[in-house]
Length: 394
Image (cartoon, rainbow, N blue to C red; front, side, top):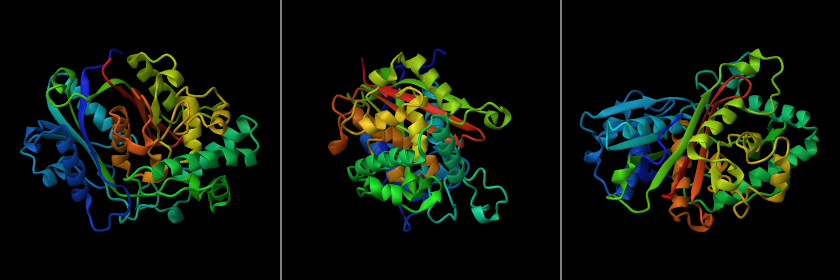
């Protein structure tokens, strides 16, 4: 797959604070995110030639983006791919730019979930837990089963496993205290995380991401045009997207200790970007930590840790802000919450700032290559995984 390595550049990004925005609706979040991106890129809204819009439940059609921005009959495409929707919208915009169809385009994702009645990220608000006869696919129970099976598959004592997951939560909460736009900004201890109320055993309160409101936006152009906007633009180096078709339910030998879509998407992205040793060649990663067990397994699925050995790297501090490969430097979904259509672009916003050296107290020294990962669906039915690798000019 040839892709479009080094052909597309990000020249501007914006991101709202994530949290409980009771006094705003989704249009306000769109305006806040997009106008920060316009200012960052030094462009006017009227210069945008097309746009891609990511939302799961807070908007429909292109008009949901067109109305607050008052765009003038330009193409606007809505993309909905659950939790990977933000990355998917971004990639569709990249295809249009790389093809030469447009020179300057906008990508925006935004969601108002706090007042939607939605009980969990990715769940239909009309079918809350209490009305479902089969709770298999409720996200906390689905990922709790993943945790239980992972511990069993690798012979990890549940008490030890719980402590490892707690370390991931502690790491992300620490990073969240350094992120001005995060929803949750307080340190927690391993003991607090281990003893927190259970949501779906073994997952407790601090193992689960929250529900929030938020928006994020990106402005992209072709790489050969980027320098007229700024010097510190960020290039798309590689991408991969993979969607399953319920293999985990169909195959009776499925190990339920990894997520195959993650593996396939990462393989595509690495091949395009020329990544042979992700642990050494990637400087930071922002991944889809909907639950702490998800982040643990992502370490292995993306090749950061050997199979069954991610717990050793967690204990060693490998993925902490000062570790060999910092993961979720901004606090991740754990501290930002998960406004589904916006999360993928929020992740990209963090890597963009890191590569520009503008991440302030959470800055990864010398960051040149970053990875963004999204995962929609659950590991026990089928998922869509997206991996995007970005970097500076060689």
